[in-house]
Amino acid sequence: MKRVHLMILAILAAAAVAVAQAPQSQAKPQTPPPQKQEAQSAQPAPAPLPKNVLMAKTKEEFQAYNEASGKADSSAAEAAASDFAAKFPDSNLRAYLYQRVMALYQNAGNDEKALEVGRKALQIQPDNPVALVGVANVLANRTRDSDLDRDEKLAEATKDATRALETVDTDLPIPPNTPPERVDTYKNLLRSMSYASLGLVQLHKKDFAAAEGYLRKSVEADKMQPDPVTRLQLAFALDKLGKYQEALGVAQECLQIPNNPVADRCRMEQDRLKKLVEAAAPAAKPSEAPAAPSSAPAPAPKPQNPPPPGR
Image (tube, rainbow, N blue to C red; front, side, top):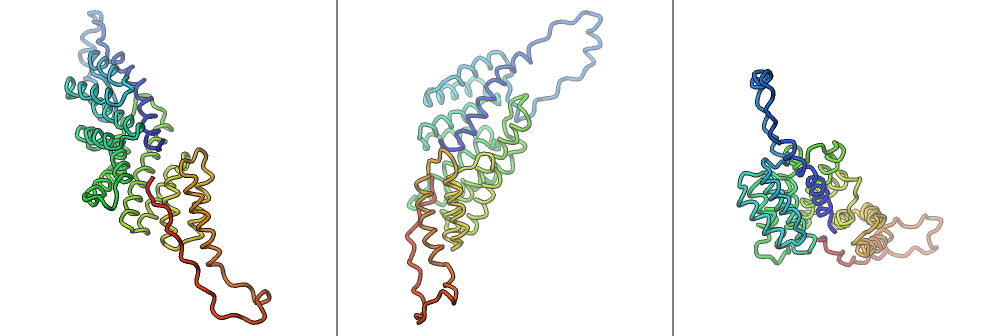
């Protein structure tokens, strides 16, 4: 399972509980005793909720949301999300439901539908960083050099990943009462995913220096949940830049990550880089040199192509 799935589903699980509590907090208060009515009428109206707070405004909205968010099948969940959006066109839970459907489709391996639904979420909330990262992630990973619309896809992925970095602190849907440390974890993971998507776009463009910069930022942003795919891509970028020793260290880090879905590819890259490092090693010391020095050493063997950078 890709990290984006785990991140989105973690937010969804926490938010489901918080949204369920929202209607209770907005229940209509009982009529106060006559002597208190005048004092209460002078109180200011409650401030509007921040745009990133998930909240059902009415009991009917909550019930409809609860039904839609309980669909486990991706197609049924999409239909329920669309029905909810039609019935409650002003609800800030619409994009959230589409965001959940996006994760379900990705978990099912249906990236085409995940992209379609993610774009629906962005039509409602253009600055939702979770949807932005989800769309950027799919585009960066699924675009191929042979695609006729390759440049358009890479441009969209770049725009969305960049925007996610700009809105993660202001537009991340945060369930009420979420511990600050958990919010920080979500934000760091989103930043890491954004940088990883930007790095992969640069690998597609063969700008390996730019790819290295973004992928290093991705690794730095989320050390708590290391991603082996990002490290494999960083090793690839360093490899293409001729930084074989650094690339070897990253490939070895990749192999140390548990439950690694790309362990075989990391091992292939490690073995390949070991040969390149050995071939580039300095000549033997004079005391160890042969009595009759030979001519210039033979050039290092031409490396085979490393594994492709995609997931």
